[in-house]
Image (tube, rainbow, N blue to C red; front, side, top):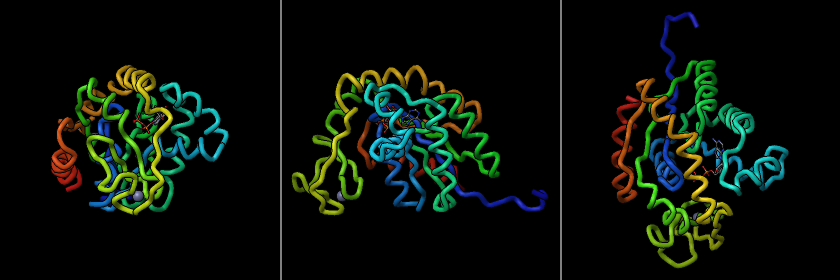
Length: 228
Ligand code: ADP
Ligand code: ZN
């Protein structure tokens, strides 16, 4: 770079929070409103497991136990996806980074392409409520829309509001024992990233125990500020 021009870079947003905090739901809403691309390492890993790739084969048992997949695998999957052409529109990282090693790798990746993190947004929730949220959730197999038995049911039982598909999926790791392990992994390995991004001056905290739309409104004002 010759320094004569500040490059206009696409927004990079990070959603932080324990499993069940609503990262995926909010990321999808941001994707719709802002044309950003949602990058979920959980989704990318589940796709690798389903496709039976070598990385997927290594990740499967780890995910079923509720532990974190190795940094090496996750960073490789994420950096590949980040290089895809659609990501020039800007990205919302959902479920990545989850460790300090991943956060440092992300910083290096962005630096190499003259990008920066606009905001790391922590969705703040009570652990106790997360087990209920996660155990009731399911996704549309047709379009990926997320639902919940109690908090966000489909209008017609078993039929997606968005695409009309009747193929609903529940994740293998959304059971009470695995959820407890996933929460423990969050506190031990991911929660320290809140301080990491506070130290970079990039952190915003949003109370995320309320209704989905209220949280979306709070998020919207953070995103508007961060991308202004
Ligand atoms: P949730 O946040 O609801 O637990 P995800 O779909 O983000 O669900 O992740 C599911 C599982 O995939 C995690 O429990 C973990 O095993 C693995 N995983 C996803 N993202 C990462 C990551 N960045 N680092 C390590 N493991 C990951
Ligand atoms: Zn659907």
